[in-house]
Image (cartoon, rainbow, N blue to C red; front, side):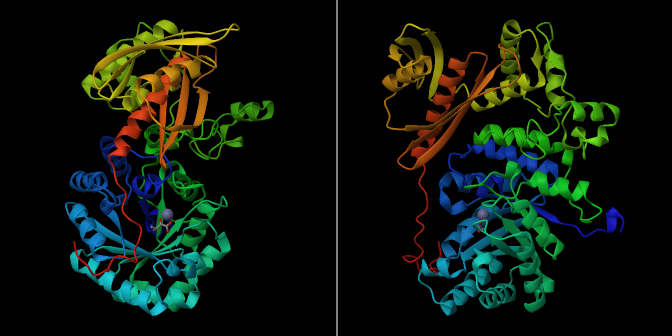
Length: 524
Ligand code: KIV
Ligand code: ZN
């Protein structure tokens, strides 16, 4: 089979919906638009842009992404009731190619929550899919927790959804419970038993709780599924989702045993991975397949020797296949704006003039402090510029700390709050604690610090540090991050970045999950 005649697998990216649901991964409106446009350019077939009824913000983001999308189908999520579906349609209808996605939990555990009998749930599926199909020609229906649903009942409800007009049937492994053989058998069973199954696309949506999401998704494709639902970096609740870069590269590198094609331009993978990591605040683990920092590093003598003689001895794909350029000394303090623009373009960043100006100023300051500015330094710098916006409510203006063997450590800070500068000093158990105490005194809050992590971007004692901070307040979780050659400054900025996100989150409300109290036929 030539690649052109191989079955085409639809890539459905849900970074902006399922990915964004992971604790603390909330993205701003602008960040969502940017990620959506990168996904569109990369060749993702369907972008699940959000859950329109969840908040005004989600609705606005899905509508705007729908208006702007050039190639991708834009999909929104809705529960199994008319109000959700109407709201979803209001948002996605602006797209050249819109899709409504509606779902309900079909397993015994999930049926018990709205307290529906099998017959009642079957009727609701029929009615809600029919309602969605009356609005939109492209309707996806998902049987949440399908892998723990009785087979006979799953066949029954899938048949109902198909008859009611669903064009894609999604079979989620919601809790990451299945294994590759079972995942394949389930799709094969549905294709064999359900009348009309050959007229629709079957999708696989796997969570990674047992570390098998990618394997389960590919097994489902082997059995006949033709849509993979996935996220960049595998972002998602708990252990995350199937990672887009893993399934796409697996089908490319092992096309001999997985002869399927996608429309993805794999050279865009690395850039998307970096952007999603930066806007979600979820650092990519160093040994993560495909996009981890170590994925193409060879440290052991035998490996290095082999790679130098023939790169294929220890590398099954080329770094360039995922858009990873050679790691070299990027720039020095004499490099100009045009060189910086060209270098950033090579790294996948196309900045507007005003953004480039800001990054240039910071690059010069960094080049003054640091002899060699590497690609990773520039990436951290741009990411920091994009995350720590100058128009934020809280902004660090100045920080000096006194630290050393003789405590207590002290910090002296100027923090701008809503455009007004405030000055304070505080002591603490270490310089980071002292700096955080300054912020707490100037901007009192109840948020609890759950995670504080520091990573060096490159080697050397003059390396930039990237700091990630997670805060929790009344069940709301936010992640903040920042980079600087001064670890304490990066820490204070990451803390402030998380607080800025929290301030935004305080104004958002989530939808009630209580389906019992909703008459599912009530329209909006
Ligand atoms: O994991 C899941 O079941 C989901 C559904 C909403 C499709 O994300
Ligand atoms: Zn999911």
